[in-house]
Length: 472
Image (spheres, rainbow, N blue to C red):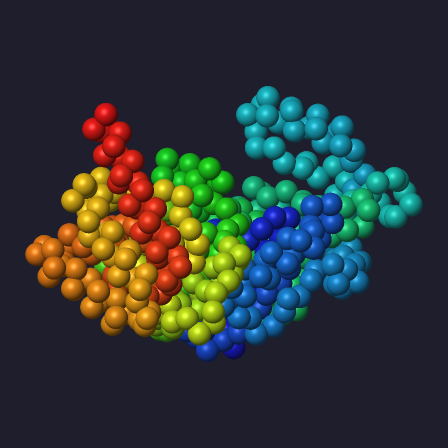
């Protein structure tokens, strides 16, 4: 059975690059009817935090990247790693090394001065050191000195590395803790991982890991190294490019489906198609469809995609998400209030849930200022009489409903012999602060009698003040 794994280190939040790797692993396992494992590589005790673990788990949950097994924590497997280290030493495939940091630093400087590749020189390889022979002993893997490591990278193609390019890497530190290149091999072996999909910053580790697999007589997985994501300036993606925590996109009002759609297109394509449902991604995704070149992160493209999802997702779902945003903003309202027509209208014009929630705030709370362009156009001197008549008639209206409000507006346009826009648009700017809203009778009905009348009165005072100042 196909088994993939996503193995983040909890030394920070889950970022865009990590989320894309997780997505590719998840899609491949789903496509192949396999299993997806989540493994938390938390052996770096100084930098790993519970907060980061929770951030990773929350991000996976929000993105709906469900795993079949896990989370498995490396810190709970130290006994297993120690056993394998002893096994490798006993079989002569690893050895104790007493070289000090000073010696290694001096060696590195000499090699650099001689324009040689810095690497361990095998000083302790044949000394036969044992625990107790010296202080601060590390354990090194005895890498083969002859031959080559060859593997078929499922993205990059065939890769060959000569063993004499690889030195004897440390597999256990002086305090006994295992290092990354050992733990990852043991875990992939024990968890029967068949395909390792990861960033191409790990390509250099792969030949070393393959040699450890061979030493342990273990099945070597297939490797697919995914090119990195660059900022629009061509440099490695960082916070200044928008490479923030995945959960920041949740905070900013993006939909998880839109983010996944954007991520799958960062380095993978299916013809010219841009928008993919989750089902389509699972059906169409393939490792050989991953581009070999690096991808460029484009925030505008992500926003565009999010807008498509806001427009096309079931209205009830978007309404519920908007209600959640409003509650987070401490906006509380009658639970029976039907936000569907408002949300449906505004979702055509915004990029995020946050923008959508902000756009309809005038229904629930007072606004501080009018949209300047809308006010300049609607609040002419001629708007005073319609607004005054609206205030009088609406104040006396016994039935506060959209139908009754519509009739008042209709009667005033007939009485003043002006078109609907000359009444409806000043009223719209008065009660919403802007030039855009659902049908004005529905809008006024939803805002309510008290707030609507207060806002109409404020608009009348605004126009009076504006023209009295101009006349002076």
